Image (cartoon, rainbow, N blue to C red):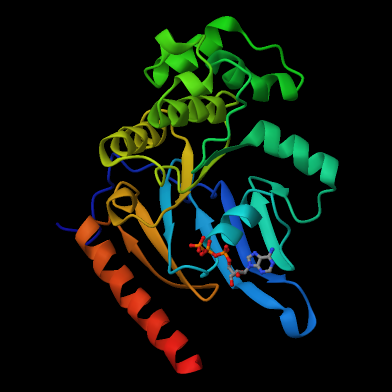
Length: 268
Ligand SMILES: Nc1ncnc2c1ncn2[C@@H]1O[C@H](COP(=O)(O)OP(=O)(O)OP(=O)(O)O)[C@@H](O)[C@H]1O
């Protein structure tokens, strides 16, 4: 007789869902004070599951960079909580925060930020050296190989294309095996084809290595490579799209940009 209960799903792990690797609770960030105070983030609560890829989008000035900086321990929220695993970031002193960023967080920027005097392999090894660890030559070469640049190890940034520089920056960000990799417009300075390759590498680091990626972008095609897109307007989360496609993301952004433009006109 049918008991009425569904058969257990053999692919589903028993027990509760795993804790998110990163969690923001009621995070607010006010820049400046008095008449000049700007609330860049307003009570933002977000969870980032382990092994997920999240894109953050929103009109200009909506708080995307501030969100990323607060989540990565580069900026301090005015109030609220940011937890990386079991560590509460908001209570940490500057020294401990710096150590945590070096060992548990990776960052790639639109402008690559490689040190021009160092070769690609020296740039990749730098986070390990800063963390007081001796970089293994094989590890550094493997990291460069992973981004398809094993044959450029001795080149300096000026001898590399923009896409190659960003791939070195990615290898550098991943060498410490960070809990979370943050990208602030990582493809913003790249042409479509090169950007596509960098996005493929970000996707691979999630799918193959189980890393967690959080990326700010203005590009709906880039955002569509993520597992979900989070939309910000005036420092507040206004919605999410799961398993996004570029058309839906573009349509949502067009609506948000138009609303922001109407609001700006009304305030003039
Ligand atoms: N250091 C600062 N001092 C004062 N206001 C700031 C500061 N940094 C950011 N802001 C303000 O906070 C708000 C959010 O800025 P933020 O840079 O986070 O937005 P964004 O969505 O990343 O913008 P964009 O897409 O243009 O880069 C904006 O109104 C901005 O002017």
